[in-house]
Length: 128
Image (tube, rainbow, N blue to C red; front, top):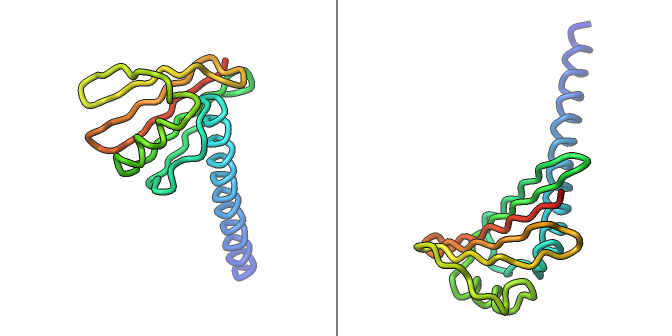
């Protein structure tokens, strides 16, 4: 009986962990795709690292925050060829550049912030 419970617990734990990993991968992929459409972004630079996708909201709201790092030259090249930021002049706040992007696909807000000191990009967009 104890051996059966241990086997069941290990199996159940594996299923829960695997499900969590698959769900997180799905949230990351869907969140990235939606945020790119809403902020009118193309694919991230090939050198993008430390990608973090955060999804919030429920049936009536949805919010995405995407963060990644890339070398400065790659970030600037990427921003200059994007439909959402290529023709914008950013608001400069210290070492931060903030691009208030015209949102796409029904989003209400889209913003791209670049931290030039850390070579970090934060894309924030939401629909409500």
